[in-house]
Length: 228
Ligand code: CA
Image 1 (cartoon, helix red, strand yellow):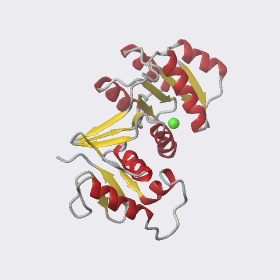
Image 2 (tube, protein in one colour):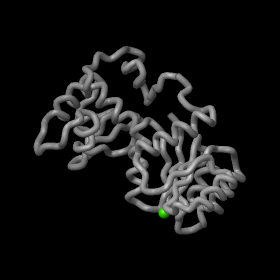
Image 3 (cartoon, helix red, strand yellow):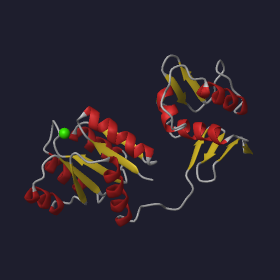
C-alpha cells in the first residue's frame, strides 16, 4: 500500500487508473497537468508517481526532470509512444520504469509492486487500519471497533463498512457497492444494500436519519464521513 501521485490528463484513463490503484489499497492523488503534479508533489511527497508523458502544459520529459530534481521518489512513465530511443532517454533521465499505452490494470499493478519493492517501500507488513473518530477498522484482522469495543459484524456488513471507510468523503454508488462488495451486477430495485446498511447502522449506533459515519446521498449512493 502506497501513496501514489497519478498524473494523467485524459479524464477517462485517469478515472480507470485511479480506480484500479485505489482498489489495490493505494491512496491516490490524481491530477491532470504537470504544474498541478509539481505543486502536489512538493506539498505532499508520494511514495510513487505514475506520469503520463503527453500532458497539456509541460513536456513529460521536462516534468520528469523537475520531479527528479525534487526527490528520488520512484516514477513510472506512461507513454503512448513505443519509441525505444525515447524510452531509454527517459530511463536515463531518472524514470524507474515505463509502460506503453494502452496497458491493463494488472500490468500497472505489477509495475507498481515491482517499483515499490525495489524502492524498499513495499508491504511493510503492518496491518492496514482505518481510523475515523471513535471507529477503528482493522482490514487485516477483519475487525471493527467502536470506542474500543469490538463490533459483531457479519461478513458482508464488514465488507460494506471497510469498502466505504477506505473511501472517506467519496460518494459510492449502489451499483459500485453491488459490484465491488457483493460481486453481482446491479439489477433494478435491490434491497440487499439497504438491509445490510440498516443493521450496520444500528451496530454503529446511528440511523439513516441520524447518521454519524454512513451518510445517504439521495439518488446517488452513500458516503463515509468522520463525525465532526
Ligand atoms: Ca495524455
